[in-house]
Image (cartoon, rainbow over all chains, first blue to last red; front, side, top):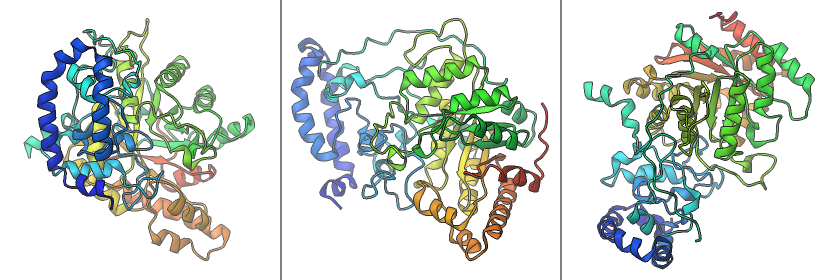
Length: 170
Length: 327
């Protein structure tokens, strides 16, 4: 097991770091806008790439799903699924394409149980907006550019819609 | 880095077309309370119209709808849409498969509209096997969107008459009956029912499962699905199919992604003559189908006879599923 996986399997410290980062970033939106989204993205990308690349093997999609998937980057999936896992996961939980790699969705769902974001495993993640790829997700998040709207749908829907009533009845 | 920022989402009042895909024959059979049967059709590798006609002749009348595979196992085949059109013209109800492996949003929507133009109303959206498994491992896998977002896209095209970009479709909305797939045999097993729920929220109306050999695992999956009440929101068609030989079974066990073939299947086929192996393959398929039919929540069957279309009529007759109801 790699060092990275060792820390990812204990995701709570990362969750605390994320919560602090999020609180800071949400206040930075106006500043980023004044500096210019692209320019601030160039600046912020340097630390972000270093930190997230090291911790999570970040792939720079700029629409970060890390805490929605147990601090596991879904863009490492060879199919780049935003709503995994696919049906090809091997019986031992490894990837069908890279037999030596753990399925990022299997790992993510395992790890998310240890975080306060458990409900996010029911989230219907919108598709990637490839125009943002390569920008800093800290900036896109702060200015709200990562809020992708698809078709007629506004906002995020959750799978719990499909069974909420039954669960409540029990 | 020079990517322009997307414009701020414009507030739209979605159109409600009120379409539900009820024109599809499969939808009608399900709505009428019959036990639907889907049959898989594999397009040929070469541009061989006779092979397609032969397959049509063999399979016609045995299913309520016919799944036409889209570059099955990531190997080049005649396109799903072209064969679907032939089926439609022969009076069969095709289910066009759309894999996200080969097409981006433009390609998917374009082909979906193409299907709608020919009056094809039943579609199935799936991620697709990775090209590494196929005959073009050097190609770029597209995966612009995933299966769930393809389902959602089809649903919004139908319900709200909009494309993925939020712009309105001129004049008409396509009337799709939308299908999805789910594999109960791949980890994480606990999560699979929830992923099915995700697909229901995305807009799927029927699902076809992976080939079932491990009935116990499938029963566990269905129990959880029934507990969550999902079987009332979506028609679950259990995937069954005969294996032709012990070699084929072994290949499935070892080489096909996401297949769970227990050892008893291999043992039963071992050491038999070629004809006996085929017979045993049919028997195993029927035994599994009979068990699966009894499981609560299973609405119908999806018969996949991989490279053995001649087995489908036999299976249907052995299971007493022939002739099909007319609705």
